[in-house]
Image 1 (cartoon, rainbow, N blue to C red):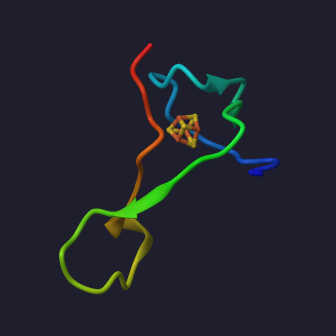
Image 2: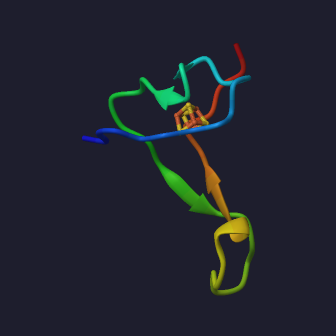
Image 3: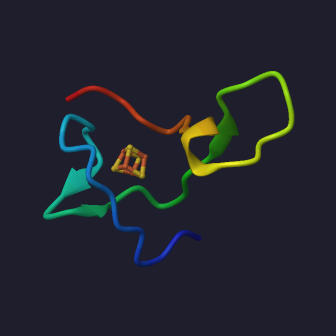
Length: 49
Ligand code: SF4
């Protein structure tokens, strides 16, 4: 279970006070190549409010 996940994506329905309230989160790759930096990761649990 994800605990103490800090997040700045305030347009997500799981966002509250700079924290994530989802019970679990899944992070995927935003590129087809090997990930080498954080900008190449994506939260796949994101849902719009
Ligand atoms: S689901 Fe992802 S985008 Fe949404 S609040 Fe949690 S960490 Fe942030």
